[in-house]
Length: 383
Ligand code: GLA
Image (cartoon, rainbow, N blue to C red; front, side, top):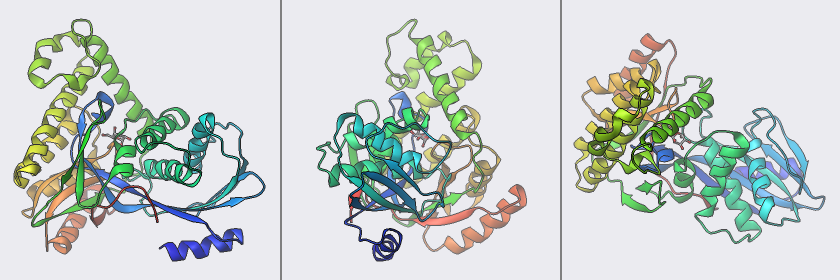
């Protein structure tokens, strides 16, 4: 891949790239919609990702090029910008904008991006491009950011420049992922453990529903706002910084404070999901893969009934998996509203699974899903 991109870079810019980077996408094994509630999540990096090649230029310009998009732009370095529509380069531009508030960069940069994470699939193509930009600038210009500052900066860009009030999970996972390991991350303290993700006779299958994710960002922000409302209601009686400070038992003592039925459903999901991640971490550690699988199904059900972020496409995939003998757990992953599901699929059953799922899915949804077998890969790095 690097050789091909190096060649493309020289064709675009008529000079050579001087540094190259890779940052993956991610799946979340369990712990959904709880990162912005200070909960525990369990993501891992995948091997799909974003590549970035760079070289300095002498005219103090930022040149954004991508092999995935036609729009290429040149912008002056050291100006503050705002987001332009939904252009792809908003993500790296937002990172420049943020970094230039506190750091000096006096050299312009020619950049070439390439990504193979399907866009809108919920595998964090946006976190991947934000983190690669922050990682590359920090590395190339020796800006002195500590490792943890990279995902935090990328999250800030997503929140403030892009306008999605996401939590830290995606940016953290793509920055800190390790091959064949999952990350158990406490999103309140940012303490984390890298744990073995030993799947024995099973593989992690990723099923992309291929559903166009219209309005996903505004619906996501709506869920974040509903959780804030639940927290404010609970704070009338108890002092909490985050919903996930309560376990379900304690929550039942105070939940009468939440009057709005929808808000109560959202909070119930959050608190039960956090409890499930604790159980899942234990199951993974003890080699209890079937227990882990059951928790995945329970997580999906809660995201369907209480958090209402699944929809026909994701539910169709998970319904199929539940009745398919060689899958022991499946759930949507990421924000939902379309995007991807993951499944623990018995090794050797890949072809049969793909065929049967495709027939089932097309019959109910009208178009095919895409199925990938994923390896758990490494986080951001120079290559
Ligand atoms: C998106 C967000 C994450 C997280 C998930 C849901 O991927 O970017 O911060 O909230 O949704 O778990």
